[in-house]
Length: 145
Ligand code: AMP
Ligand code: ZN
Image 1 (spheres, rainbow, N blue to C red):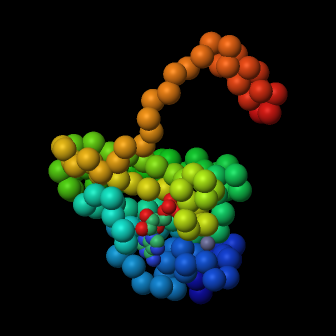
Image 2 (image 1 turned 180 degrees about the horizontal axis):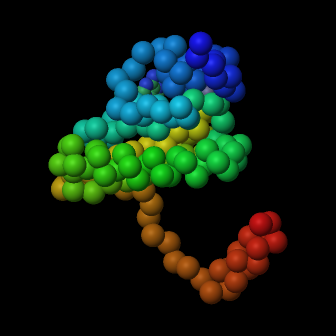
Image 3 (image 1 turned 90 degrees about the vertical axis):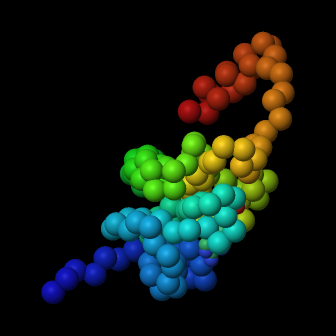
């Protein structure tokens, strides 16, 4: 008999349901810990999402083991998707919190193939780094690690 894997899922979380196959999806890749699906509102052709099968709200609560595995999987998918879609580049994006653009509160990583002249994303307007401020910020972060 196959052992049932007990996973930490959250009730009424759509990505928990998709990741665990309760809601069907086009699945590009699946293993014990993750499912990769196409985004329903794609930024470009082939835009996909890595969903952990366990529920974590965001980067603050994901455990370190899952966090390290997710980037290894992102690398694998970037290679495969770039080849499959003949893409010219690739963005890996991960939003945390409403202010950062997160709209579904189950950790996920965006895999976005890029194509010449697609003009699909402009992520930020470059500001200006100031020496004094950098010194202060550097100190603050060091105190929090
Ligand atoms: P974020 O803004 O980082 O939270 O990204 C959420 C993403 O999930 C958006 O790009 C949505 O288009 C996508 N999305 C929302 N619901 C679904 C769904 N049921 N299946 C696939 N993608 C979805
Ligand atoms: Zn969830």
